[in-house]
Length: 156
Ligand SMILES: [Zn+2]
Image (cartoon, rainbow, N blue to C red):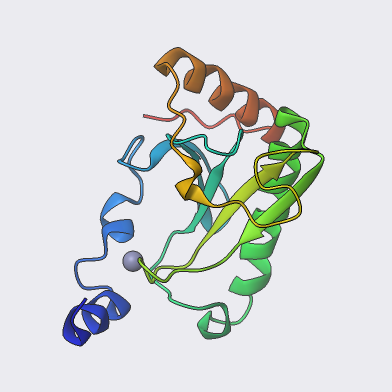
């Protein structure tokens, strides 16, 4: 990517994550809940069973650049999302990745891990292959996550 393109993404110009905030569905996945300062999405590609994305609702690129109090709020959302995900998917361990090298808009990959899974002893690699499910299976999992979150807000 040319430097100008990267700088534009950092500024939030043409940020695909900003463009998708608030959508019930996008190319990545399906909205589960709007939390305090971030949205939880269930990934279309379940390369790790239960893979979700927690996206900060405003354009920000790094944790250290968040306004006072927002870091704590984002972490509260993360713990809440991780707890619900771990319970629904009966994870043995949770991984939380914060990268942003392709899309410099603050988001965390919430990855349940299982004893003996495909990347035992290592970080999960999304290149191991997409696992796409039937829409009804996503809907079931979204409802389970919402129930675990105590999320009762009606989603459009
Ligand atoms: Zn953005």
